[in-house]
Amino acid sequence: MKARIIDGKVVASKVHDEVAVGVAEFKASHGTVPGLTVVLIGDDPASHSYVKGKERACEKVGIATATIRRDATITQEELVEIVEGLNKDPKVNGILVQLPLPKHLDEDAVIHAIDPMKDVDGLHPENAGLLMLGQPRFAPATPLGVQRMLVEQKVDMNGARVVIVGRSKLVGMPLTALLLQKGIGANSTVTVCHTGTKDIGAETRRADVLIAATGFPGPITPDMVKPGAVVIDVGVSRVEDPTRKRGYRLTGDVEFDGVAEVASAITPVPGGVGPMTISMLLVNVLQAAKLAAAN
Ligand code: GUN
Image (cartoon, rainbow, N blue to C red; front, top):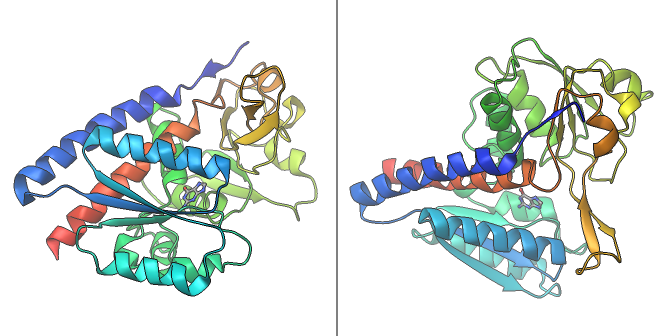
């Protein structure tokens, strides 16, 4: 293997330490700790596992955390009522409604109901708009994590040709906005590929930094990667694997073994972007608490 493996756990742990210091300082000045409430609907096993990870990380850095769990049968009105209750609760600085929601619920309407000052997911139109305009308040945690990782790895993003595969509201779209901005870890030339792109390989082969965020296992093959490129794999899919005790393994968007022969650096799955997402959520919760305290 030629590529350097980018260890997300190491970078995430550095961010955790920074947040822990910030939380202690916040507590010393305000006498309270930042608080995150997660709303988890239904019984999707991947969502339950993500939420557990978020709870554990909050506890480690001293952020107060609670999870409201409800059955998938919840109505839109009931869910919006929960969100509105959290909007009014001064102990709650950050609200995160775990996605995806069951199909009968209107995801956009639920996100719109969140107080934008508590929207630590950065998905409310006000926060998405601010990010687009280059005045970020809360950006989604995964794109922030990808950017922080690239900065820590000293990847020169200034003028770099970045190709993002995937245009989701959680990753592709906000990451595009982040990397287009002027500043450290940004000022890149960004191309976004999606299901309408005619020849994805022709685009990805031009990338100095290739970021895969399709959510499907393995569409990025070695022939799609420019030799020496930095490859960031945001995808996490569960693939059946009877040889594993739990019956599945986690796989990214990138065909890891082959691409690692071509790239100069690559993130693994698991252990790459995943830990960064959680750590940047903690950063956003601390930021939300500071903004609330300043008002
Ligand atoms: N589901 C997968 N990733 C995320 C995330 O970052 N935020 C929310 N709310 N749901 C998710």
